[in-house]
Image (cartoon, rainbow over all chains, first blue to last red; front, side, top):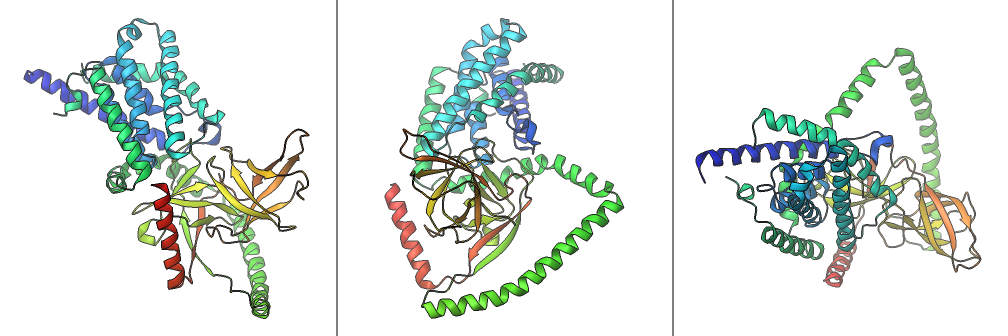
Length: 166
Length: 293
């Protein structure tokens, strides 16, 4: 690796770390009850964004690390969210070329499907390891995630340009 | 710098993560080996919880400084009235307690265990929306232990499931995976209450058509299983439906405790635990560990 590559790698790492930190704070913030179930899955959005814009560098392994941090914060069984986010990053990596060519509306639908796969997988796995039952309310946050995607995408894109992460 | 940000090699990386995750799931659901790293990381991540509680503490600051004086006076008067009422009731309680002990002695029944109460404040963070769990700012440091019963001023809230150095996790009775042994206050019929995942709905399964249960019955904890002390109110039956073709009747209930509104909870611990009881509990938990392996 050339030195310039090394610094851009470091910048990317700092960018991912800061946005994941903000997403973790947003995930655990206390909410009024009317928005409680519709609150987006911020972590999934952040992982999907970085896997989309930097598919060669942010992949399953980064998803796994962020998911493990989330498991510590939530005091869940280890392995479930890590694997779910790794899967999400993997799917977005594989389709990033096509996703970037889509309009924002089509992107919203695709992200909805991918986050849905993530939620289905993690819900099912936590049912296996921790006796979790999927309730109808479990799916409401999908709507929030889809609706927040364009705003999150544009905001993160602006910030990424401002600090020149490639 | 960090290897995860090197060039990503797709399938092989995904396969590696898959293997790691399956191993972690197996290890974590069968042993407690990963609890130590979890505790260390949870201390490292505690600033996140601090930041997340900033909005609600700001909100609380403004409500407390902007409350008008007449409102405060009214609130103060209400609290004072409540205080005198409870004080007078507790006078009566003492005589009742003595009477009860005498009666138990006459019946040669064992003494009711006294419970020690620890007050705990809920943390201003929304822990996990998918499971009905909350965290409180009491942990190993304050002598909290797994399995401790948690109540508020109205009724049973749940029980402690995880204890960390500075905080612990309480699973609410409405969690879909939680069941609590109860009995009907009116006639002593014993049954179990299951959580459903909705904050105002509990289910009472496995009652047959000739069970004596009607809407409005109060369910109190029965003390079976040894986790919860008996006699604390849990839920009120809201509906009993008999469906002809089904073996059991459908009974729904609503929790009495303010599960989504209370800021303070009480942790009950058994004070008078003799050496023998501790030994028995240790044996039971040992047996449970062996069963799960």
